[in-house]
Image 1 (cartoon, rainbow, N blue to C red):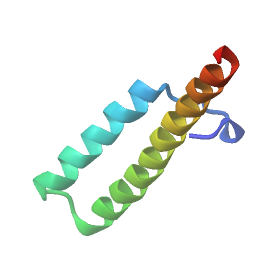
Image 2: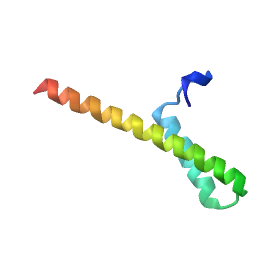
Image 3: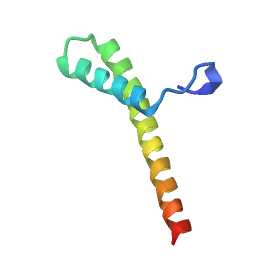
Image 4: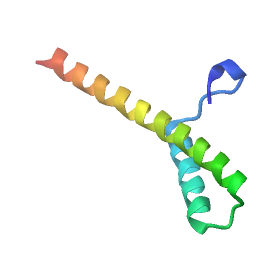
Amino acid sequence: MSEEDGKQKPTYEQARTRLEEIVTRLESGGAPLAESMKLWEAGEKLAAYCQQFLDSAKEKIEASKQTES
């Protein structure tokens, strides 16, 4: 998910969609343990990425409110 490894960062929507897919897969219970662990780790990274995106958006909104006042 980082630009350092040559990949472009996903949009918030792409990350959220992938996270939903991972959650659905994990909830189905059909994946072997090793795969489940990899999915869990990927889900944790995606959740953190989405939260960071939302926190950044909130900060921008709050900053714009401060400049308008």
